[in-house]
Image (cartoon, rainbow, N blue to C red):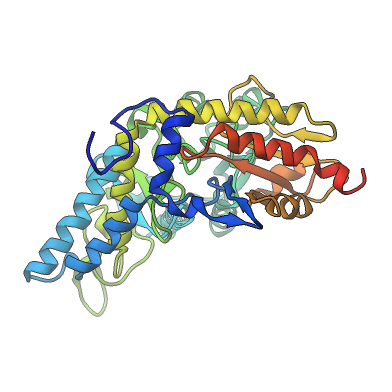
Length: 433
């Protein structure tokens, strides 16, 4: 075992090994209202191990410079670190280096696709970009499961181009209605955008079904992978999607950086979204020529230190082994679902206990607003998410306006789950219900 890590490579995760791993996360040792912190909000933002914090600090101490520009040694070192980070992160998701575009977050990555397609629809990009153009009569299809970031960009693209936006409904258990999908996706469909894992329900989409359905009708596939890449082995090439978006801050890395995966031949043909410095080869007062992908989508000063830190987060996860991370979080997720199902007056949203789900669970407590649930749990040191989780259409389909979400990661123990369940079981009684 390297001295850099608390456990040997690919060690199966259990309470004992997780307790050792937690030594890399000092923030988890703090007290909240005189209780040991239980952090169950990693679905929103994960915590950072010391190794990741050190990587970003070391970059600023020894390599900080503008990338892709300077001829001096420091700039060369910074550029090497930046591009090495791209190679590390792209390899983690089964992509080539020229298939990974740095963005500010996953939301920007999804917007990049939508606005690039909109630019193609306006004639920008020439003949090679025509394949992405939309017009009246074309359709964009998404699902009722989606985060707003995978809905609103398509609303705007439809408004810009005259295309029609449709959605695939859900079944009563919160999973996609695949029978309905086969009727909704047609030869008029240009884009099929869907989430890999619901950020509210923890349900897992059948990506193979959706990709084959899109390919049957010649549509591009766009995958929201924000809740899958941090928690389970993911290979975009194997999945067969055309595009995918994911974020660093949900997988042990800093905020302020995300990534767009796109098949290289598509990225090369797409017109840029943001424009300005760094992404060009030639500029006159009337026209410009662009760099090859992915650089043509990376205008302006880049998120260099964040990329370097993200690569360190990837190495941390690879050391643990994503199969181990997935197995442990599945255990935690099922413990959550089973425990919630036994509490009177509390409704588990999404797949029932025993059905496929990831390590998160959202609930509706009869008679108690989610914000009140969250604040009461906070007084016991338990951090959860409350609200609509940027998924208002999904909550509307479930017949509620908001929910309380507990989401786990590889640094959580079964004791964390049990403390949450014990506190949750007291909520309705506390409010006199």
